[in-house]
Image 1 (cartoon, rainbow, N blue to C red):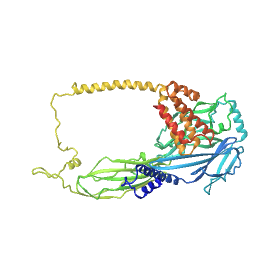
Image 2: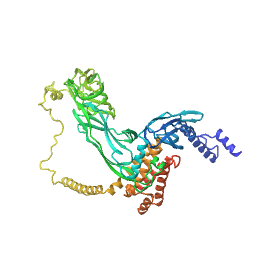
Image 3: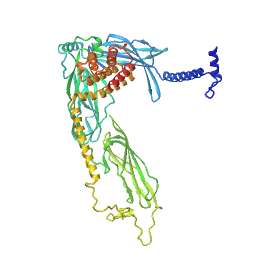
Image 4: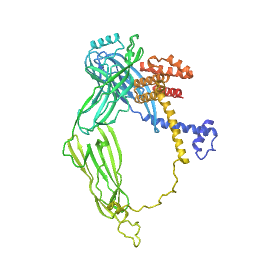
Length: 631
């Protein structure tokens, strides 16, 4: 009864302005109820933000005899009833295996919660052809959702795949030129001078790639270049000469040819680190083949070089307009004119905006013929452009500041701008409208004293009398004769400072050069940077629900960090070796055990889609572990 009485007192009498009506314990309860209300409010919106979607992830092409995964992903629910699809043309090796995950994100105060359920099949095909997998459905809260159909092409033959597998087992460490190579490709083989060309540098591989140790970009002689590489490397599947490759975009450039003729993108070089099976290792099981495990494998460096790619650049047609300055693309112009009435000796500006798609970085300032009595200043340029595969898009603004010096009525001619349109193969001229400006007399001008010849101002002398200089105003800036700076106290102080800076630069510069020549020092310094880059990729995969990429990047980041930090080759790394090295360096045993635990959880989750810890916990533990080791 006492509890009920307190609650009634809270409801009927207590308020933010009346804290004396109830007991202190009840005021504490009121605060707890308020916190519960706030938590329930935000939890409601987090839950409401979810929506149900059902999709499928599968490769577009596989090789005969190759094991591959197909995943049916339910986003927005952990309690779904799965109806399996119709699988024709493939043998089901395993599945469906079910895995679930939940993640909560808070970005700029906005919360979102994602619940994901994944059903994974392991399939294998043997006969060439294109096969369709359809009919997968899930039921959530009485509502049925269907996944889209997936067409998968099987290339090659099972006999050829078995023969290659038998040859690979006899010489496991041999990698042929057809197993991994690089290529440069352009989206256009023939363009006009100034027309954009996109060159894409790709790595094709049929073996597991562990990273890139060296990259030498190609030379772009005769081109103006701009890097437009994607934010992160995306793996794709492509079929070349009947063989399926994993394709990675290494770099992508936007090129603008600056001269006509036969130009070429020179070869580029890459040193890739690949995993190959060691001669003493035992055959892997189905999960090793499917999940890409590295048990019994060693890293091998492979130097790759592409071939040059030619581009034919055509000269622009004759008959270009007089105001054509090399702009190529599709443009529009607009302007912001100055006020129609301007006082003499007061400033104003004319703003011209150029919008569209084209070679903006090479566009010159359009010319505007102002009246002779207008004093012009340097034109300022403001850019808002984006480099894309379709070219450079956006706008560029040109601001023309000026000061009219004499009163009267003037006309500013409309600006002209000409460009070449490669789609139509002709020149286009754009013209702005004329602007009428009335310049009023300057009422603030100083009157001319009696006896002094009037009618000529300082501005008139600057315009019409270039050989006459206006009288200098202000102090003369004279100093006593015989006072010199050399050998003065200031001179000695400046000289001493320069000498001290020279010796300091010599000492610290020499130390920096020696450190950069020390491979162990360089690996140690880059360990944290390389690991954080891997962890950022893993974080992005976690947000998208890509479990396989997440665990793969987590393992690469942790093992690579320890290899660089401890100066141990990746082929010699093991959990016991890491524990010993960390113990010798005075690292607490709990950190070494935490590293082994995180790696084990990642490996377990990589091999078993339904097992292992949640991705969020493993990511947080990995980041905290690296932070502690850096301290």
